[in-house]
Figure (tube, rainbow, N blue to C red):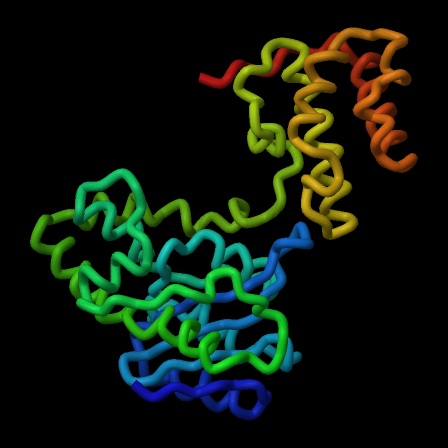
Length: 297
């Protein structure tokens, strides 16, 4: 398979426009950074046809019109392994949702009748009999130039997706599992799942399941406040307020008390965060007549 690195507008447009008219299957993967940010920073886009693989450098380009057209083409199936995070990175970077999508991890779960998702390494080993070296998972993808080891890793991420897809489709057809596959792939088509959800942020706080009653209401308000702050500053949520502090505050201050302004945990944060915490909790006290959140089942 031929490998090509694309970091110029002319090369991107030429490649994408050519594929738009000639292919029906397109392997897709991304590399992004999210260690120091709230939103994913898209650093590399890998695509592959049956004959060629490309690494597209989004840090070197400005106009992605031709790429968006390719990723949204209804006649081209985009094949991704464990698609959710890659789709989220693309939605954030380009405000589009690639369609239609075939997730090889979901398909493998169905055909192999397993609850735990098969890794890409195991997928390629099982369906392509290739034992990939996965030594660049934690690499710094936003640094340039990329090393030969990084590029090999990136190309390998799409080299085997179409061959694996074809074997998975054969298994799906042999087992008459098209309906099951379609229902499991359907959530990937919901663009809102890749967008921030401040109202539902409390459900991602570690330890939330043990919180009950008015404490759960307060946790919801605190988690929403933290989410909005993280979005505005594009910082990881844990850098704003740690999960364990949100739980501590929700458990201790669901009822009005003068001890709020003496809390040691709040005092460890800067003045802006302290003020946001006080404001959120005091607003909660002022509006404490609302109904309890429905308990999680």
